[in-house]
Length: 216
Image 1 (spheres, rainbow, N blue to C red):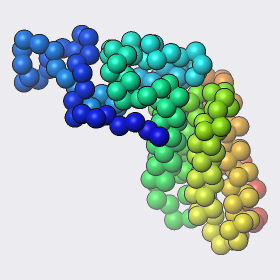
Image 2 (image 1 turned 180 degrees about the horizontal axis):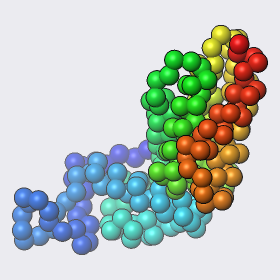
Image 3 (image 1 turned 180 degrees about the vertical axis):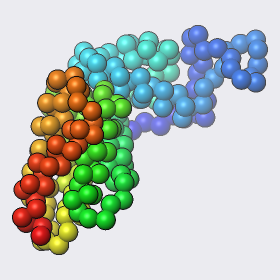
Image 4 (image 1 turned 90 degrees about the vertical axis):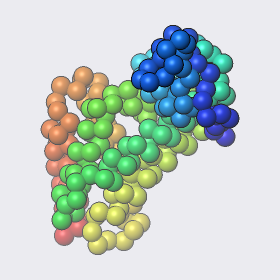
């Protein structure tokens, strides 16, 4: 279960400078929600760079500029921190896809979804390592959260395919999901030499080549 800070303000971290109109003779306490957000942002980069096993809570605390007691006020363990980060990153990806440009045909909606997908990882490359890296294979709960992301993406795709049975649409959506994962892995492995929009156009062409004859 995710821990929640018990106070509105957390302990002042070493080196926290007074900002804005706060007092001028001491360090300031960061609001708990702001500190939690800071820790999650730092952890995304740390886990994305080094993976789950090679990232310590000491390293996350140091990069966030907080003490370990402050870190543990927000997350009871490294496992919890990564689990929260995995779920949050998956939710952010799905929100980005679902809020992509509104288009008037299934094909254009598929293309818009792919653009949102690739742009998300172009802007947050560390998110790729968190969602698709080897860390998710180390724990059943991590695998469950990663599976929920894939399942939610598949359900999104079924809603934009037009008139067909749900089971057929879901099966094809699973195939498109696999296509997306394969292409994002290839793209990241090559260092994102193509733009996100170029990759989205290629993915949409490949996906629609199979869907076109089935959706009419």
